[in-house]
Length: 565
Image (cartoon, rainbow, N blue to C red; front, top):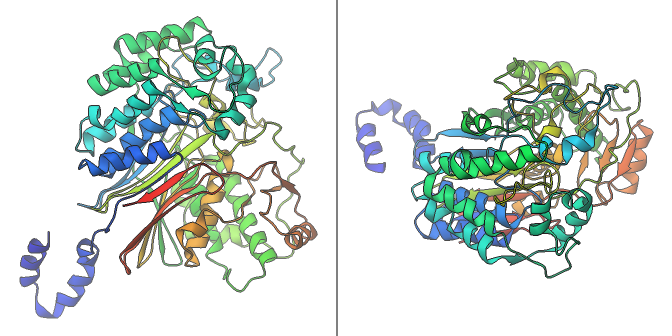
């Protein structure tokens, strides 16, 4: 590459040489001196680094980590789920997002979770096979390997297969989540055989062995997409779901396709922000919020006023999420307008410093369901070539649907709950919406997953987190911390607070607001609620190009591991 640049520069008129060098400077910047991986589990992080040590690139490592997390963190992701993989390829600067989001079965219907009286029955949308969309994870891993990686699947899936076959000791997060989901888990015999011990909640030290899942992974390694979406694996998935009241057909699996989508790009005070487009709401809500906040100088502002302004930006951006966003293959959305600075100027115009914005007509209840930090997962990768991946993966609620089709080892998602079943009724995270996100056959449900890249003149950041509806606000707070020049370890420790339009209140983790801030925000008319547990499990990588340093950090609220070498 350097030789080609020198030859081209020789043909440039001398007076234009300096300008030309400025234009090509990003292409000649030094590559990162180290590889870096941050994920929610040590075994997954090790799987990614093993692949990098074997000559794989960041995209190969992403396959390995995705598969490993499907085995070792069944509370958050799995082959029965989906996700978004945000990619940057250093060789040509290409950026894309692999959309492996689940799709509604073709037999799904608008009112499938309503009873005869038209009431939403949420237990049906979060438990059992009826709640499961058609998984995108296996197809996305194969696509990533075939189009961006350089190693065969039998190599990149080897660690996950080993973890599934040999087993591993579960941690505190697993045990806490299994208590939460035990009533649903015991209703699936195949799931109970895997995740429970003799039908009961396992104790500390329980070794989770998943031999059927190892066989399914081996089929994918040998046959690619066909190893999951057709043949014996597909037949077992369909038969198992239909026998238990699900809607899946072989056609649902055979016609599933991943989609490559152009990421959303924004600019915030000299920072280039690259994030997830619909069917993720993450990039739109993040961009709207940053655009509004760009009109304020937050540095000298008192912390009460600063947090008030951030909350008011969240409130307005999440309102637009509910009004406009859905699957771009099914609905037309004004994304260009929503993410424009002109629209942000309109929204900012009615933000008042002395009081909370537009009161909701009817105060909404706080979501009744416990919300854990690990219902989704995220990992970030940077390799020595400068390739990078930010990937957020999910099966939705903890342990997804708590259903496993017999003989597959595949724990199915309950992402159908992310659709709007009835206007005014929230999903398990309290998010509401309208027709753009109503159930339709083959449609992808709206998501809050927000894998993101941040870049300024000297630094490149790779970040994301689990956390349901709070994912976007966590990435927003980390971005504001990045903008203040803070290091990676700071972003994952930022005290967290959140507003999602409905319910009309500020949710904050213990320590997320000081007593002084709580009192000050209440005086402005805000309602507040402290969550029962800290939330989020952010995983980040930072490349400081100016100083030639690479650092990585895992959220202290979780069990993740960040390694640089």
